[in-house]
Every structure is written in C-alpha cells, then in structure tokens.
Length: 381
Image 1: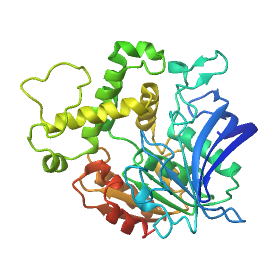
Image 2: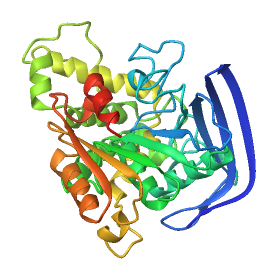
Image 3: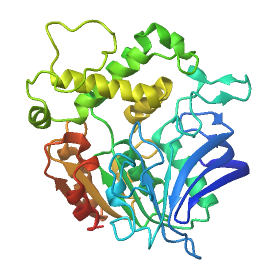
Image 4: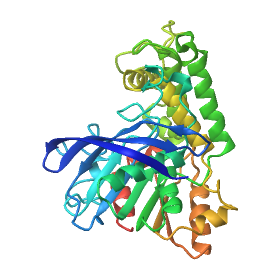
C-alpha cells in the first residue's frame, strides 16, 4: 500500500541557519493492517542543507520514547540536550556540513506527530483507543511522504536504533531504490517472544491504572502510576546485569529520594537501583502520553520484516543498500546473535552487509552511550 496524498501543508520555523523544526500534513495514509488514517501531521527537525539534486539527505529514526531532537546545534556536546548529539554535527559521523539530516517524530507518537492524543476531526475529541493500529511500515510510509515533500530524491543513508532500527530495516526493504546506505542498530527482523512478553506486562500496568479509563483521560490526568511502572520495567530490559551491578550494586539510595509510583512507604529502606527506576518512571510521565506508549510498543511487537512478502528471504533480497548491522554483546532486548544472523542472511542473499558488535556493559542502551564505539562503527558505512 502507498500513501494517498490529496493535499499538503508545510510549516517551517527556522531556529538558526543549520537547524529547523517543522510539520507536514498529508490528507490520508493507507494502513498496513487495513483502513485509512487522515489527516496526518508529522513533526520533524532538520540540520544542514539539501543539495540541488536532493541526494544528500540522511534520515535518523528514533527509539520508542524518542522524539525529533536528535541533535542540538546550540549545545552540540551536551548528551542530555539531544539524544544522538555526539554523532551528528560538523565533522561527525553524520556530518551536517555534507548532509541534510532529518529526524521525524513517528506516526502514533506524542511529540508533534498524529497519535492517540491528537484530536479526531470526526468527533473533535482525542482519538484515545479509537486510534487505529499502526505498524512500523506505516511509520516508514509517513516518513517517505515527508522526505519526498522536503525535496529528497534519494536518501544517502537511514540510521536507527531499537524501534528506530526496525524502521531503518523497513526503509531498506520497502524503498530499496531510494536508500543508498542503512544502519540497523540493536534491532532485528522481528522481536522475540520474550521481548513481546515484557512489552505486554508494561501495557497491562498502564491499563490496570484506574486513571487510564479505557484510554479516555484528560491531558495531565492520565495513568501516571501505570506509565511509570511500565517505564521501570522497560528500563530493566535496556540495561544489563553487569551495568546495574557496576552502577548500583546493593547500595542504599545515595541521592534525594523520588516518590515511588504508588506513593506507598518503602519496606525497610530503599536501594539505589529502586530510586533510579522511580526517577525514570517519573521523568517519562512528565513528557510522554500513555496511549502512545501502548500503540508504539505494540508496533514494535507486530513488526515482522517478512510480512507482505512470500518469505523472509524474499523481503531481505530486496535490499540494495550498503547495510551495516550493529549488535551489542550485552543486549537483553535484541540479542546480538539475532542481529548478526540477520546480517549474515542478507549477505548470503547477495547483499552488501557488514556486522559490527559493540562490546559494552550498557545493554540495549549502549547505542545511546558508547559514543566512541558508535563513531567508529558508523564510519564503516
């Protein structure tokens, strides 16, 4: 299925010469699981300048609770200001002096793009759980409409980690003629049963919160307890035993204590790792929509790169890009062996695929922390 575009609207706000934010609206999109959704707004940021041929663009795709702010031109060395700051910018692996870099908020998100918290034009109320099931393929098709609208004729590269890595892989399969290079980081062709299980426990925590109200909650009055617990569980899957032992061990809380999601008293004191999880849960509640968490985590579960093709090989054989697959030796969510196997399969099918493994104690999150290793890895593409 392809995007059906009847009209477009572009709003562009310059921040400074090399960095801009914008929104793009398309009338409707055919969804992978059936039906149409529209109008759809996609929020995005760009850095650098598109060349006259429209061939120097790089698309960066974000992870589950990420957003468009992959790089901050004002604070290029601050890893807290933008989620991939050390990798993007002049002279860096994703060089904004050479490339026009784009990062869009995914369809179903809550950072400017259409998602469950958006107003349904038919009812003039938020979609809530009336929002349709969306998939990684749907996200990529919306991105495809965006990059074409921006004047991009060919993508020099697509880079993404985790659910962003699923998007990068889908780009290489769905639009092989448009993508020159692709980096699939900490992601594979489908999520394991264990990964699906963790995501489902997180979703059930959200839906068990009385404030969820079947998805119909007022802004600022959503299921904070459930979303916080969901985030706590997710953060465990993003770490490794080694990293948690190194960072927390069995130490008592060493920082100012954060209120637990349930606000119940501690049982005999608090461990440092518990305080960390409470902080992570509280932080996500302040910036993320619970229903978006349900829909995006389910899109991660539903992703199967072979869907719509006769076999996995038939899907992977479509890849024409120079492909880099990056695994992480301590990754619990997307084990490195699955990423490596995917790279080997692409290579066996005649594709130009390379596999690199990060050696890190940081688990799945290593692609957001191991800047030196990531720099070296991306320079191989």
